[in-house]
Amino acid sequence: MRAVIIDYGVGNLFSIYSGLRRVGFEVEISKEPKGSEDLIVFPGVGSFSAVSKYLVARKEKFEVLRSNGTGFLGICLGMQIMFEEGTEGGLNKGLGWLKGRVDKINHPRVKIPHIGWDKVNVIKYNELSEGIDDQYVYYAHSYVAYPTDKSVILSTTSYGIDYPAVVNIGNIVGTQFHPEKSSLVGRKFLTNVYRWLRK
View 1: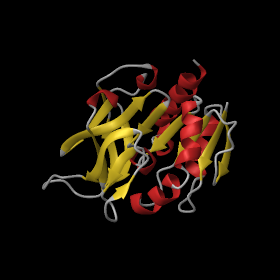
View 2: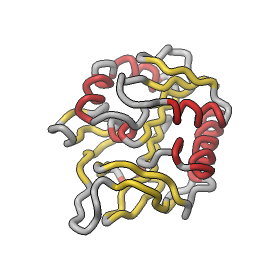
View 3: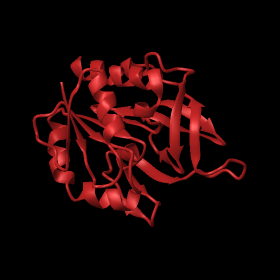
């Protein structure tokens, strides 16, 4: 199984590269999809405004791959970009694959950004949910997704508000947490992704 991590030109991609290799993927880092990969990964580095410009400019290419059944994994910001729009750095368009908006965590009593370990609460079970319910994973973010279609939410995390931890529709999956930094639970999730693609 081949995975390509899209390099937006910001941030260190070594952790997700290593995490994917550990569970069996052949991994490449590239600025563009190749067209023959099984999984395209949008990593969780950068800002919504900058990354949206990069990805939306290539949306047509990604749309073709998505319609052909290529899997997509978005991590943190990479998941957020899959929504219609985000407010980080001004109002910017996302890819629009998931309905809803990305906005700042709105709660007066929690520290922003949310950095550290928090619990995943699975609300919808499928193969991607296996072994992660009630487990702790690593977060580093100030913005969250507010989906208009709640059926895409597989699990949530509570940090002042309940927000999506994992979303999935068709051949798209996104995580607000960083599986590559979430130790054994993160590895289990990436293993789930590998098996999900093989079915």
